[in-house]
Image 1: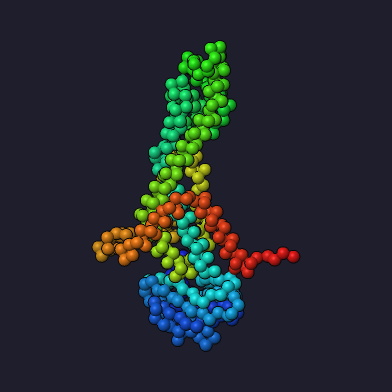
Image 2 (image 1 turned 180 degrees about the vertical axis):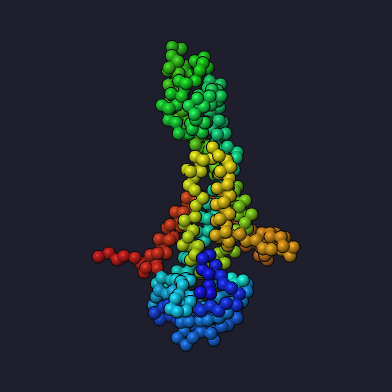
Length: 106
Length: 278
């Protein structure tokens, strides 16, 4: 569990490795960036999981999604390992093309 | 739908600011004793020398009440209060035009017009409160640098924060106004401490409202400070602060209703339009 989600902004220890998982029927993560540095290579083959280390400071994470033509509910969670997850953000039915948020690491 | 969530979070933050303004207002109203002063002014204007303020205060004190209790008096209560004022008969002479009017009739006449005086008090007090709300809204928005445009931009770029604010802002409170009113006349320190703690806690929960940055000398200053980030876009900063101040001055009850309305729309969009009729 690298992320602390108790406040409004997720926090983590500097350089902690964070694994994010997109739970959606068909949508996938197409591209990912942290502080405008492309980390798309860290997206796994299924297009549902992305892992990256968070540098110290305020980091803006942007995930560009490939949504299906019809809207669907989706959830972004942290994959804590051992089958455990913690929810970060969720969306109801609708078309969502990107997700962006900050992670503060110290 | 993301736009609605951003708007929802923005309305949530405006509501939180209103709660802060309300808490500050309670402390200042307690310290200045505005309700009692407005009531004293109303009573003085009401009957002038025919019903001296000190006599009314004395009659209320005998009953363990202060001047603000008159707000809840109806004409019958006021009529009973007149019975408790000593040597009132000579002062009320001439209130009723008829020479044959008895002292009891004169008291009835005064009590009958009390409702109008109370309405006048309520109008004057509401007007004073609105002015206070307007002044404090701008003061707090400027002090925090809660620039509407900058906050909207931040929320639009951070969906996690926007969702977090949307989920919890509706619960923001610093005690109901009714509670604060009942406490204020008795314990200024208590009102001050509870408001201060509430404001501190609220700002800690919503750090986005405090747009301050640290200068080289480690001094924290708002972003409108000389050389601050607001100077990059001065027009947007001025408009953002002015609009935010105006919106906050509309008050917590208004924004609470708006927040609930937008939450309802957001929920029905999330569930794909809600229930279908059979």
